[in-house]
Length: 312
Image (cartoon, rainbow, N blue to C red; front, side, top):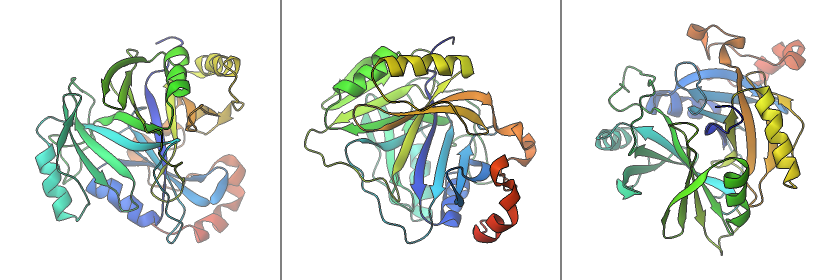
């Protein structure tokens, strides 16, 4: 694990109505709501975190719910366009029944790279997939009254990037991050790291004529890759900088420490640490129950609580 990218850490997307977002992911998809905080750069907006019981890296989907009525985004080149979750084999039909019950938009199960998958949209139009992984996934699922272990998500399986030209992005993945190109299906290229067993896949779809995507409601804001600790984080900063890419200084996000850079294809990448984790300001059993504010906004708590819409 030393000095390696350990697959995906988290993925962050844009949503509209906060309560609708909370209800869909915690109730219909059955993810654990692990943190209710604010956007550190825009404290008048929530930042929600969903994941497994403890918020393990590789399970964390986060949202900036900008509010009802925000402009709709558009999937296109230069962005992450699909988020894939690992689910148990044989569970897709049960998910189809569940989606029917809750009026979720979905496509019939299909197969790709020897794996069955089910594509669906969240209420804001974000595109996700449930994938019956070809490799064993023994990550412990979070269970709810309706979503039990036989169908529950295990965490991320993959993320898909759509690009006009994949050359520069592929170089970042292989030469800096340590991924390898292992499969190709027409214009979809699968890159995998052997540093971890799960959340280890990045797919690139190359569409030379695809229009640039627009980041707004229902689209992915950025993709975060995982490293063990701060020392490893800063080693990767040097690697990215040496490759001629602009990268931020280290930023403290309370639950992890981060670097950000835009890779050559236009996707915003983040590198994030495992430390300190989501129990730094809440007990494990209390994750997601209270509004957690970074220190710089604590003096504005009353103002922010009055402004942010209640969700539960």
